[in-house]
Image 1: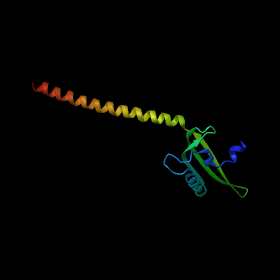
Image 2: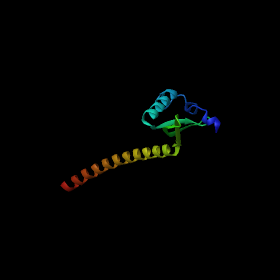
Image 3: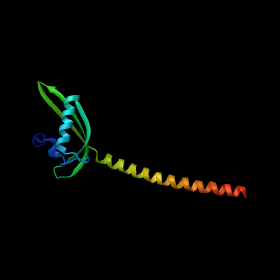
Image 4: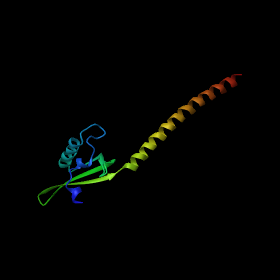
Length: 119
């Protein structure tokens, strides 16, 4: 536990975030926001002790406690959520393709019905 507390949050992140920003610079911006607004909530890529990278949400809460500035971080692994979001996007694309195909088939059918009706 002591090893975790003594680490800077960037020690637990890849060098760069998915948007290309340097993790240290980006996290310092989030810290500044938390100190200014009292909190900051954002998505972040974290790194496990074994080096595995995983997506997370981070909630930083700033408070004063006995004249000390305290920054609390709550980190939640959202790997499963991201997998589900990806699956939903893929299924939506499949549905869009199927809808487009059905619309085309429907137009063809309507045209054939018109032709047969005029006959």
